[in-house]
Length: 102
Image (tube, rainbow, N blue to C red; front, side, top):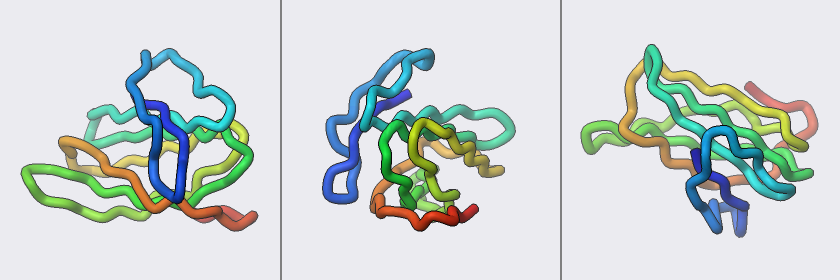
């Protein structure tokens, strides 16, 4: 589990935390687990809703995904992919519209 802030559309000040941690105001928290594929829970404790890019990294290959918009103010999203990934790379955070997309 990692927490970070967003600066210029990219993760900044990232550091590991306990899975029971809560993100501070302005922070995002991401946990990735492997259960029937790859599961990622993202919680955004900032006032800005985001769209972002997520890529699954596995055996030296990168697979782009289409994650849901990330709502503001502590609401989580759950992303699930059928394949097991070694890691998930996130980037390109942009302000999301009001409707949200999934």
